[in-house]
Image (cartoon, rainbow, N blue to C red; front, side, top):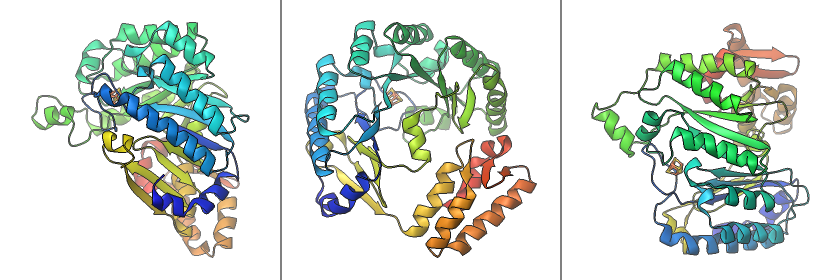
Length: 392
Ligand code: SF4
């Protein structure tokens, strides 16, 4: 554990006992690097044994340091968790059970790349207690998938969804990407319909987000590929907002759609600002007023030399996070409760300024006030980036 975190341990320990935590574990390995990716991942699998060893020792250390706190959601993300060997997944799951109190566990999600799963692996994951799977489908068009540098084609993606069902995953989610060069509105809608037709309970829609350094950005900068225009992308999001509920997938967050009661409980905790601990290179944590990430290259993290990025939020920053994150949810937030918290913190003027701005946006049809609650309208969701700047 980083000495800076060790110094704050009494506070972190107290914060971890208030309510069950969410636990995120980052598996930083991929078979190949997608052309748009800016996540902390590597193709160098020679680092895998050492990294998994460190992840297990971190799990044990943090569980003991925080007093074996209760955990109600687990999320194994990456990277490509489905690249873990069966013994590695079993060893990590066992370490989690020993280090944390998993008795209140309500959801255990693992991310998987459709190009890396087989029935036996999925069945083992299911037997180990992982009950929800999130598959990075991204598109069902082989040309677009190749453009993104994905290691799988559309047939493999559909097979992976089928295999997950056969393995007993009743809770299946897929990611679909919007804004890929060459992707038309009709193509996105066809893919969304096909995915909904598989009976998945959850769909995440992401806008292609390009880091400066990625190969796809270089192709765009050199004029070899063109990104769809902003209006075109907005049309896609609008069309999805209308069509997906008809297919049984209702929006509950800006980028997420689900069947009734199928929200991602783990991800919802981020928007509700509930506590979470992240383990692994570049995983983020938030306990009480502290937020931190251990950054740096993967080999350095595996050797315990990650660089700590630690922030202690002040009262106004903590207060601002409730609307900043909560307005991403379609149910919005309880403004009366926020006002009471602001009063207790002597921050009423700040809260009043936000309220007056949000009430002004209601006149433009971007926010909706219902009694004590406020939420973004469908059009407000499309313009959320600008609106949420209010709280930054
Ligand atoms: S599979 Fe995911 S994490 Fe891995 S390179 Fe592709 S986008 Fe990045």
